[in-house]
Image (cartoon, rainbow, N blue to C red; front, side):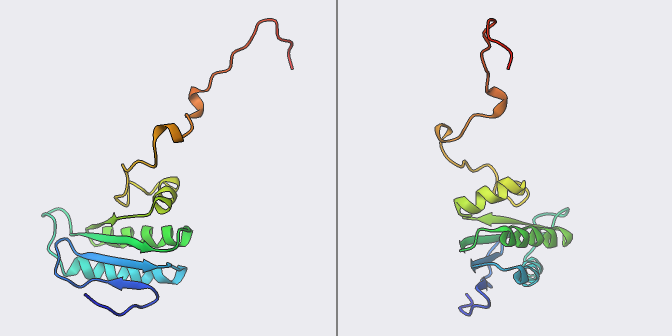
Length: 142
């Protein structure tokens, strides 16, 4: 494992299958190109998942300290870079806040972090379509 850090970003070079890119610290707007390069390098060092797809790269985001649109943008660009090379990325251990932001942006399933519950059903509000209002026939019009 590489112990040096560059702008809070770390790439694990261990020969794991699938390869793992560890991202730690805050992600700034200028970090996306470097992260994309690391995803492509990880893809090149790993065998493909099959004849029709390139390798999947696991992005461990458990150490990400920023939950903002720059983080979402960088993760989306990493997925785009992986797909252009014939593969994909999957997120490992996103924080609940990051998972929520990805879900709000519509990227949770595209980044492989979908399907995880955000909380108990009792904690969430019902969808607006289920709200019903009773109307009394004798009520005056407003």
